[in-house]
Image 1 (cartoon, one colour):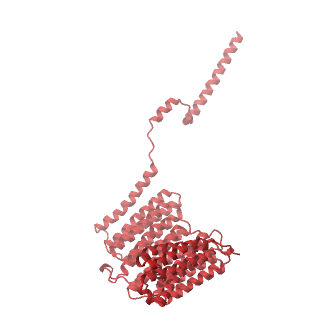
Image 2 (image 1 turned 60 degrees about the vertical axis):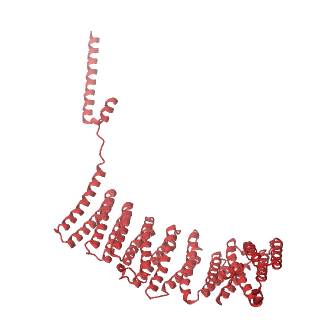
Length: 567
């Protein structure tokens, strides 16, 4: 009985302890309801009835942006209703746009980047249309003042975007500024002001590009800039510009055009020389267009206004010499600058050609190019520069074209009537022959593969010069007789052509690139034989022509065998 009582007492005690534990657990669950266990199926049913959460942040930002635009339209409505004077309404609108740009900077500084981007975009959407309307519709701002306002807002917007990395804001600010400038240009017809405003915006973007920020933005402004420059040249170079552009000043237009290459030359030099960055496609394309539009456009505008000046050409030549110096004294000596070296050396050559072309129309183009060619070839051999060799050959080829020597040589080989040549043409011929001799006389071990093209170009000029000289010699010695017998004249010219081919074939044994000229002259001889000799000759003269040409074809393979040259 005692044992039974003890068992009951123990069971009651155990039950009491269990009840106390349950009470304690219930108290914990009431204090922390999220941690309470639950049935999985019930939870799934409850989750399926939940309402999806709304994107409260995005909706709030969109609503705030709409309120910003509503405030701008409120100012516009008060101005239209004459509740605000027009000047006060415009000033208040611009101040309102600037205020939201400042708020964008504050939000970005505090980490609210989405809010900052929307505020900056809203500020641009208010400012640029307002400037256009104030200038075009109300006439309250002059074109220059409007340009300054557009640049000011663009500068502030780009500064805020750059400080906080707001890419969308930077793009829309740039596009909005360009659109505003072009819209004002269409209405007010002041391309100089538009060009200067775009140049200022482009300068800001080039500063950002120096810091590797948004390099793609430069294409947008450059496209607008080049379009305005083309318009300015087209209008200013006309003898009588349209009435809407009657007030255009030639000196201002030329100065604005010269500022175009100045900007991009400075930017390219800063990126490639100061920072050592490789030249980009943008610098190649826009640098070329800027130089062409700036220097050639300024020269055309000045000439059209009766103010012909050599200043653009002299600046281009000085810049070309500077590019050469940078290429050979800086870029070539630094590792990883191969692309920059070719860019600067090519730019130097093109600027020198373009500048001397402008000057050469009045000061002896042929001698200038001949001197440049001989100098470049000499320096190329002296310092082992293949680029200088190539540029020297191009200068001499350009001189031959300018003097009419190449066309005269082609006419002599084709049997066409001659044209009178200036005396300076023979100076080019002598210069080309000397330059070819300088390069051909290099030791075999010192001849790079890239030197073949310069030698080929120089040999072409020399061959055409010899053809014209031989034609002149024939005309001087046998002129009266050959004039009476077209067949005999054809034989004489065939003999000259055969002699040229044989001489080139002999030289080609040590200068392999001359084989191309040999092939070209053989083909030209075949065409001449069929079209000229057969038509103008008679059986007796055709025997001589065919015999000469047949002998040439037999001797040529043996004569043109390459020979070993000692180094």
